Amino acid sequence: MKKAAAKAAKKPAAKPAAKSAAAKPAPKKPAATLAAAKKPAVKSAAKKPAAKSAAAKPAATTPATSQAPARTYGTRADKGAPIETYVARLSGDQRAIADQLVSIIANALPGATSELKWGMPVWSVGGQMLAYFRAQKHDVRFGLAYVTGLALPDPEGRLEGTGSDGKHVKLTSPAQIDPARFAEWLKTAAAARV
Image (tube, helix red, strand yellow):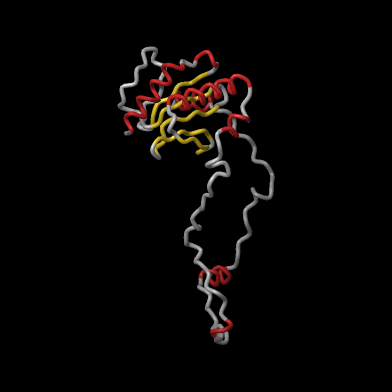
């Protein structure tokens, strides 16, 4: 008994109920009205509309459950453009890095074709992508495409990338460019394509 009294003493006092329209009980409906509400409504026969002729039928539309039409993607406006248009838009260190890379690639791969693809300069040998560079916000990435598995000499460990699509070097200043090493990587990658 003492425990029950102690628990009751610890509980806060109940708040008085607020006087509102929601707290009032709903008025009772007469029994006849309740019985009528439970019975299903009887449907009256509706008149059928007159049959339409074949000429008056609207064109067939796709049902609401059909899928949206497939998206069509156009080609980039700059695809196939000369790389000079890309380099001309760069400034500062990015422009200096790009100019040096273009020179190194042109000397190492004299038979390569260059064009803009995927919004960046790309060099191909025998129709296969080999090298690219792309100006990022904080660096320029010089990359070799599809070279995973090739023995590229990289004693400083500068090449990044573990995927099957290639390796790249992040360059933030022209001083980080090693023309002899980059040319060696390009020639090794090109020789593997033949």
